[in-house]
Length: 357
Image 1 (cartoon, helix red, strand yellow):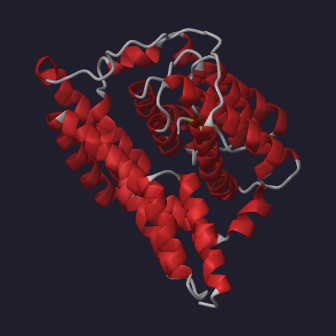
Image 2: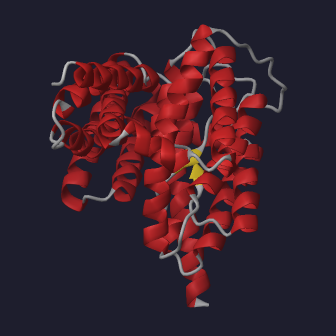
């Protein structure tokens, strides 16, 4: 009984971690109800394959997908086609081979650039809602410095910011009042240079993230994780969600991996998220949890967790010219997107090789 209770608590912890990032997806215009399909596919896929790595809302991918493209149709198309490309790659078992070919310098530089992107989104959110945003920043930074735990950081900063919002909501903007067609509605996808660029950006981001997060979950659960299998599950989830207007979900580092029965705790967590989304509870939660309450967590995730370690790894590698390659990859990713960042890093590495630097 005690073990089952731990499974349930781990699942609830995963849900709490995902809700604020789900609200972030709403602020970018993604519908919540269709996203339930992604969690249903994730739960079914993990149950069938005994995979311990769950899929959920992931701030990095939501930010990239939500800020690229000229309209929602292009953004949904990017998610769909990017996931399709990843499925093809994974069916041939090429995930880890691609990361080996790209190399750790470019991969780390790209992730560091995404850290910049997250920090900028957090700053912009805080500027639009200065009171709640500032409180979120201060509380998130304080909690993370004290605990070094992202679950505590997101939970406490969001709760405290929401309490402040409850007493001050008449004087602060509600960024979730934008009109979202929150139902299952088959989307008309499009294909143009911007969509191709965005799809490749998401592919580049998720190749590194799936391998890193998948292996971390496996280590926590003391189980082997097949990266290609979990990529197929997350990609099918993304395709189903985007096809009906929902947001992206990706592999995350989840507390369920530490549960006594890691697979079934993850399945329960994703099932609970699906129920919350199907019954349209996420937008209702948004009435009490302002979108700007996640600004502090995004800043911590980007500026403290993602950026420093990846930047150090990219800039301090032993290979000749690696600091230049890492720096170029990082900056181009930060000012454009992960695909252009990776492309810039590969080209720079090639040029340095030609000139023998």
